[in-house]
Length: 281
Image (cartoon, rainbow, N blue to C red):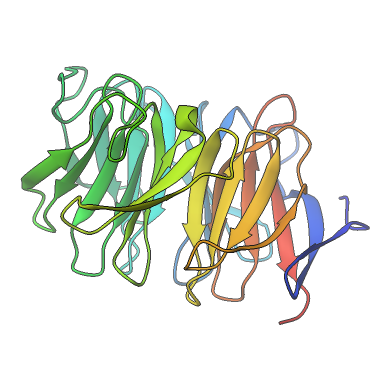
């Protein structure tokens, strides 16, 4: 494990633990997509090989797997406040909600039936707002963000292909912050756009190169991975707090735990998890 590298973002120092997570002998990570952490500190890794979902204890021991035969193409993952695992199947045009055991709770979308300017056409990511609504970035076939109620009923969509305010070119990730703003990684437009919960445009943060994923902590800080590769830490007002390069080839996904540690899903050729272990506050 690489643990001699320390990175700094603002006043926060992190030790870089790479690779993080112990697999059984003879087993390796497949192509990694995204990563998320539940309320108990369990780390869920979503990968494009079997088993699709790997569950690690907080100290990096593999404790469970699930999802074989369930997914066509792993992309986004989000864990709700009540530890429901929301998984985005990009090529099946579907969102699958699972219990921590892997049992399916519900599905959104029509499996293997892409829709034009409607849910879904190669969706990318999902997040949940404090009111329980779900927001899904629909970014490879469509250029939309869709809102579903907590009951799973479709509410509304916004966006179209383009580079103006409220337009997208590959909306690749979505996050809802404590201020009830919807942040969208507008990848090919090199920006993060911010909206209210009804899809009203607020502003755009432009200082990125192909932003890949977004994670926000309980303090309101926003972390964005991009393809330079690097990790940016932003204030809730959009001020750059710090940047670092803890990965070699780019993190397709980012998550974090209650202790302030960050977890990065690094893409090929490494296909590994990197933990940024918070050293001080």
